[in-house]
Image (cartoon, rainbow, N blue to C red; front, side):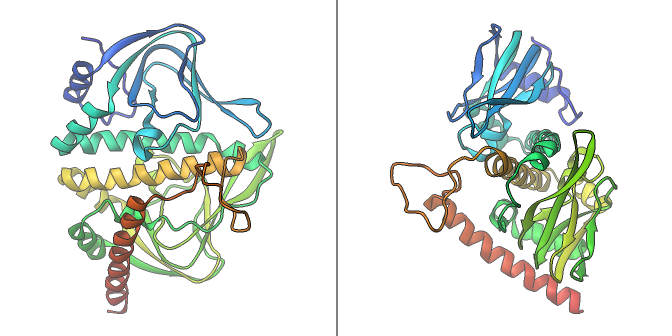
Length: 342
């Protein structure tokens, strides 16, 4: 049985054994394109040995490396979570070996085993968080403005159950933020995960550009967004500064109580980490396409082209999901308001 080297310590030995049995090992010659940008694929890969590069093509057609992947690295998590074509290409730099696990087998296992699902989505979340941290310099160097207001409420509230929301209301602490208040300071540790209930928050990152620290606003967040989740899943300091653009209401989920709940309830943990993974995957895809690489984003002033698929198109199934999540969020907001007044 091939021994996997998995990072972050989320997987148990039984998980590693299952992955080894469910998958198969492939030898990848140097210069082989394992994943081609713009195409869909139906496997997840773990690098057993060798070296890969992940590249993305800029609007000028020139490819830029954003990561190198060695033994223990995962390939394909982003597309598995958001079910969209890959934004990046992954190419073998040297002769390599990978363990290949099909989406079909993995989805079946996730549905049947909540403990495995919790550990899997925790691992995915930490991986995507590290990828987001790794592109900060690219975002600061780009010439585009901050992302438009994002309302990603459905990514969280479509994944979790009503009883999960009850627990959040019970343990959460509602906080009002006056315009200009700094909620999260880049480089500092966090003691809570936050859900934005009302108002608008600005996200800024700092990176070294030509040996000079440069700070830039990269996004504005609308109601329903979750914050501080990256520091929670990868146990690192905050990767960005988050400040109130206007008066806001947030719900703080204390880190210790949230961690205890995740350890005690595998079903909740699977849903929570799945929601976090969906948020991070969507955020990573957005930032790669919108900030740097000029993919097809629909503009309100342009005519629609039926033959083209835009990066931000929403299908009917997703719209139904959004509608249900919106209802959940409105109910959740009323509960928090009532608790806050009390």
